[in-house]
Every structure is written in C-alpha cells, then in structure tokens.
Amino acid sequence: MSAQPTAAWQPQPPPVASFRAGQARTLKGNYQQVAHALNLILRRLQVPDKAVRGIVGLHGMMNGRDKFPIFCAHKWAARQLNFKGQDENADQFMGRTIAAIRDAERACGRRFFTITPGGTPEQLMTSYDADHIGDAAVWLHLRAKYGADEQRPDCADTWKKHPAAAFTDVLIDEAIARLPECPPLPPKVKTDGPSYTDAWVIKGRWTKLYTTAEEILVAELVSGADPELAANAVADKIRSIGKDVKTKYTRERLSALSAQGDEVAEEQPAVADGAWLNTYPTDSGCDFIPADPAPQPAQPAAAPEIVAPTPRQADGGVAPEVQQNQPLFATKRAAALAYAATGWRVIPNHNLDPQGRCTCRKATCKTPGKHPRILKWEITASKDPAQVAKWWDIWPEANVGILAGADSGIVVLDVDPRNEGDISITTWIEEHGMWDETLEANTGGGGKHIVFQHPGVAFKNSASVLGAGLDIKTDGGQFIVEPSTHASGGTYKWAQFRAPGPMPEAMIAELMKQRSRKPATGQADGPLVITSDGPPILDGTRNRKLFEIASALRGKGATEEQLAEAMHAINKARCMDKFGRETFPVDDEEIATIVESVMKYEPNAATENAA
Image (cartoon, rainbow, N blue to C red; front, side, top):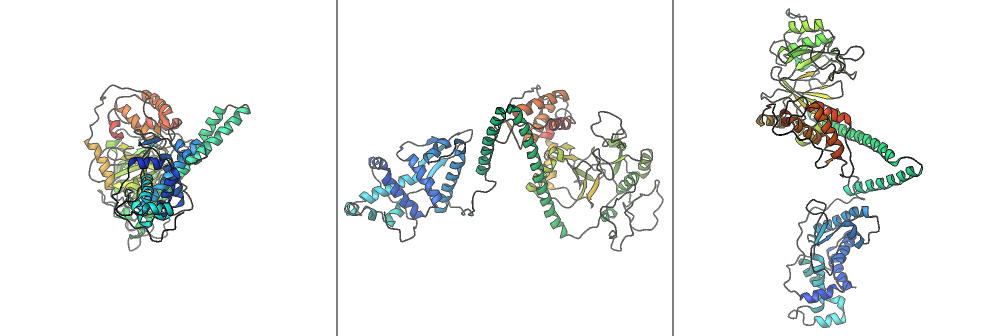
C-alpha cells in the first residue's frame, strides 16, 4: 500500500512520455497491478465510494480489450458489476451507476469513460467507446516501473526496493493530466436518496407492480377464475384512478397559478363587483347598473329588473352590503335587457323544462339549452331593448346567449374540462404566463368562460387550436351567460365580475396563423384513405393525436359514420400506455366527443383547426 498523498492535486500539463503498445497489452493481462494504479488515481481525485464501485466495475469489463466501441445491453453489463437482482431491474441499476460516474466526472473536471447511451431508434444498446481512466492507470504503472531514463535513471532500483514509493504524487498528477477534460457543473444537492419522481424509481415500482399482478393472476387461475377478465377489470380501475389523479393534479396546478395571479391583482386598486359595468363603453350610452338612484329616461322596454343595485357610494363603488353570492338579476328577462344595455348582442336560446329536457323537443338534441330559438341568429342577434324585451315576453325562461365578436367587442375562451381543457389551459399558462385580470364565468357544466376584449383583428371560431378542450368564440359564435341553466342542473354564474381585459398577445398570434392557411373549399385534397396502421399513440398525447387524426380525415371528406368507425379502430389499435407496451384506448365517450367536435367543420376546414 502506498502512503496517503500529502498535497492536494493540482492540474498539470499532459506529459509527453509514452510506452510501447506491447508493454501495455502485457500489463492489462495483470489486472491487479492496473487496479492498484487506478485506485491511486481515484483516491487522489477524492472520488466518492458510490462512483468508485461503478468506475472499477466498468474498467474491469473493458480492461484488456483493444477494439472499441463495445455494444452491451444493461442486463449483461450489470452482471459484470456484480448485480444480483432481476434482469428487468438492470436498467435501473445501470442508470444509477452511470449517473454517479457522470457526477464524479463533473466534480473532478476529467472524463473517465466515453459512453453513448442506447434506447433510441438509431442505437438500441449502450456503447462503451473508451476507457480513459484505464489507459491512464496503465501509463501510471509503466511510468512508475520503468520511468524515463533521462529523468529517473534510478527508477528500476526504486521499483525493486519499494514499488509503492515509485507512485509519487507528481507522477499520479501526470497520469490525471492525461485524462480528457470534462466541463465542470455545479454539484448536485445531496439528498437522502433518489427523488420520489425519479424516472428509474418510478420504473422500478411499476416493475414490482407487474410482478405482483402476475402472481395474483396465477392465483386467480388456480381458483378457477379467468385471469384475462380479472386483468381487464383491474385495468379499468387503474384507468379510472389515473384519470382522477390527472384531474386532481391539474386542478391543483391551476389553482396555484390562479393564486399567483390573485397576488398580482391585489397590488392593483380593488374594483367592487359590478362597478366596471357603469364605465364599460357602450353604443347605447346606457349603463348596466344605474349610476345613481335618480329616475332614468323612458325606454322602449322596461328597465332592467336587477336585484343588486343598492345605493351607490360617492366614490362610484358598489355599497358594501351587496353580497358576492347575491343574484344579479331577478329574471332572465332582466338579465337580457341589462346585457343589451351594455352593448352586447343578445340571443334567446332554448331552455330546460322541469323534467330536464330541452324545449326544442328533439329526442336527439345534443346541446340541450344551448342552441338559439331564432333563425339566422348570427344576423338577428340584437342589443335593441325593444326587440330583446319582445323575445323574453314570448319565452320568459329562455336561456340568455351573447353573440361574440367585433359587434359585441369581446372574444371568449371556452374551457371544457370534459375534453381536458383544464389540463390544456394549465399548460398554456405555464408556457406563456397568466393573462391580465378579465371577466370570467363558471359554466353550468363545470367549465369556464374567459371573456377578453376583442383585439381588433379577425380570426375564426376554432376548437382545440390552442389545446384540447379549448374553444375560441368570436364573430359568428355565441356563449351562454348568467342566469341561464345547464343540462347538468347547474347555473351559469359570473366568477370574476369585472371589465374584460386585453387578450394575450401569444393567444392572438396563435389564432392569427389560421389566416394564412388555405380556406375551406369543401373539396378533399386527395383520396380518402382510412387505416388503423401507424405509430403507437402513447398515454398523455392520446386526445390531442386522435383529434388531429380525426381532423385530417374530416378534411379529406370523411362522413360522420366513416369518422366514427375509423377513430374507434385507430383508438383500439394504436393507443398505448406511456411505455408503449400495452394497448390503452380512451373511453368510447371520448371518441364520440372528438367526432362530434370535428364534424362541426366542413372538409378542409377541420384540417386547418388541427394544424
């Protein structure tokens, strides 16, 4: 054993001395001598024990080989490093080992090995391209034994008398200088173990789950049950759990992002609920809530029957006794008149009868309570109080719709959580940041309407252009507002009651891309080819990919029947779990929703919306 080094290692210029290849090959055959030199180098560099085990193991695997690279699967390499576990856990073991070596290289600033990871279409197995530290150890041993005659003529005598004394700190530093440089990075924060979200830890836990599942299914078979049916039942339960976890986590992230936005908003002057409506610019000059208790001039229709308007304070705010949860309107007629006075074009919609059925009386109605009662509603929607009052005198319980677009001065982002809209909007906020405070409403079905000022540029109504479950309603589109009722039994209600804010620039830019795309012609670009062949669609991208495929098929002229048949086949054949090992199709209801959404567009137009 050599004495402990007394001085800290300092980088030295690489030496020029070298030895014959025959000497190196002979020495590699004596692994113990090379291993001793290698340990001296690692000790000099103060490499952690965790990395030392991996370095020594990989060097032992590559020592004595003259030809590189060496292509080697993890399950075989792990055995060379004395791994005693199951083959399916070898990936995890080798991943931890190589990661520890990489950390040690960055800490020392020197490269020990050149390793190219596998697992890609271009290279399936990991390749071990060079053993730099092994070459440095061989050089160190030969230099200590033979030396350079012009510098150490007594080297042979020193080696014969005391071989350990020949390995001096200066010589070890010269061997270290022969290692390629590795760009140093800040050291990782030391933890008690791998992160709970570490990919290798997660993969190992899934492996244990698969092993346990196999044992349970064998027991099911022995007991006389059908293991395949049992597995299908458990798979359905796991899908349900996965969906619940995804929804819960997304809502937590969205709540956290909203809370950050609230903190920013608190720095701005507070605006009482409803106060913005007195200053909102209108064409009619009317106010949503009377600005003062004085009598108003006579109007062609009755004045809005609003419950909330208590006496105004001198500063223009709403009196503090107005409660947030207090209904704004006594009737739907009052609401429609108030919205019209604001300058919004109003549309009477069908509503739900006491039995929860749409008043259109169609057994196959797909949008109960959400489609207009009037013909050519895009044109006849009105903000004239007389016309609005006439409609609600005829249909007192009609749901209130608002025509979006330039005429009303607003654009609406419709967030539908049933189609993963809550996930998409969370992702959008994380990428682009939270928008300025604006008017928001909770829909009766659990979604959200986010109302922005019209940006003054034209773009199309669209579905899922910004993300799955995110629809844009502008010119020619309508949205339902408070106090309308939803088929689920819920009620539309304003959640953030203030003047509409500006639309985010990133959102406008994405929507403006549609203008440069080819307009709808009703003609397919090529022959309609429907097949379920194609690459796997992995969990996490299924809804988006299926929507894109459906849009492409619709763009080529697929009918609703053709589209439904094709999407069901593609779903069953190509949708896989996140590892790409097992089929993992979405629910049939999701496919029906995608087909219904895509069928709203004419051929070629659907392709534009999916682009």
